Length: 133
Image 1 (tube, helix red, strand yellow):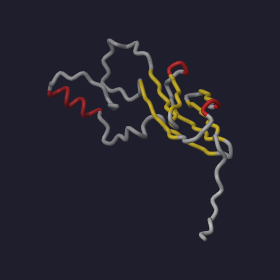
Image 2: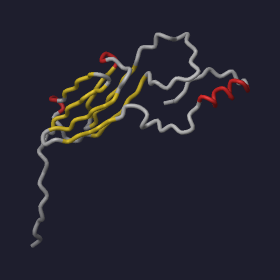
Image 3: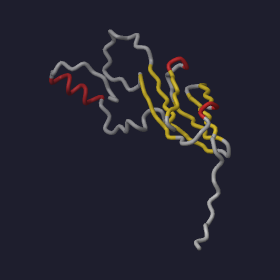
Image 4: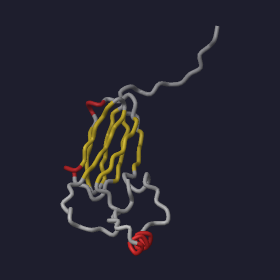
């Protein structure tokens, strides 16, 4: 994902202008879809920040132990020329959940935060020592 979008004309002025708006340091992984994952006795709960997206823009899939959350906005501004664009128009992120009850996964989107509740399939196993004969 690029952290800026500018039309390039290979002009020295444009390149200087672009670098003026470019940040010194950008960690693209941490700049979108910040997530808190909480574990309870029965569930995993993911709180995913997705400001600027509407519920209709978001999709949620479960496959092979992974939950994938994707979002994509419709582009209604095809003729607009941005000097800098930092807000995401599409994003996707996957989380490995392991053995869970995928038929009981629930999601709720409110105030720019997607809350996904993922029920555990099997209770956690208690660790214990095994005697060797």
